Length: 233
Image 1 (cartoon, rainbow, N blue to C red):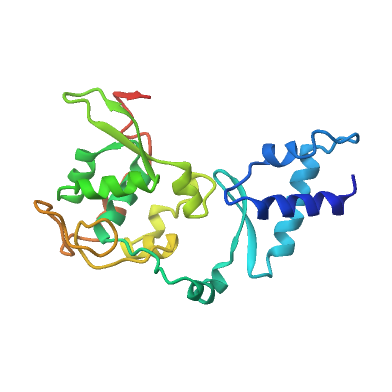
Image 2 (image 1 turned 180 degrees about the horizontal axis):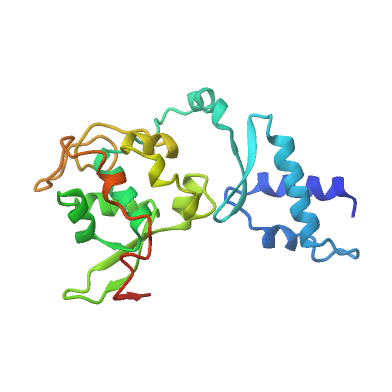
């Protein structure tokens, strides 16, 4: 099969679906050809496509779940005008919690609270799980067997990451605003709301008085630091 035809098929496939496609899935498109197309050929054509799209308003990126076509960040302010719904804004409390899970996973809710110095709203955990950014990966073998939280492939996809180690190094971050900039997350005012700027639920303890540099100061670079005594599902 000619390279141009492979290119056209891959380009059409990536545009036809609304989710990332893995290299295996893309290679499977050519499984019935009389002249086999190797996985390496498919990979090489994908690289060529990425380079070709580099100067366009859309780009082909590789994320945790595979390859996808997406709007380039350089044109997103204009494209967003096509949609009435504004992108969600995330509270500092939600961002702190998500950062702690991402950098210190697997981690329990009480361990998050120990670092933050304030209680973690149930609303925040619920929001992160509903968005499929966080999941329960096991239970720590201590009294009460608390749930251990970790990030998901959907979290990586949302932030255009292939692996968790592509997160910005903690040594390069000084506060939550740095993390938000790196991950392109708009931050709303304080509070432990669900990320839309809403007020904190009754009983939640939080606010903007929390030191925002605690993330870089107190999160371990070693994701296995808290992995002991864990039952993994």
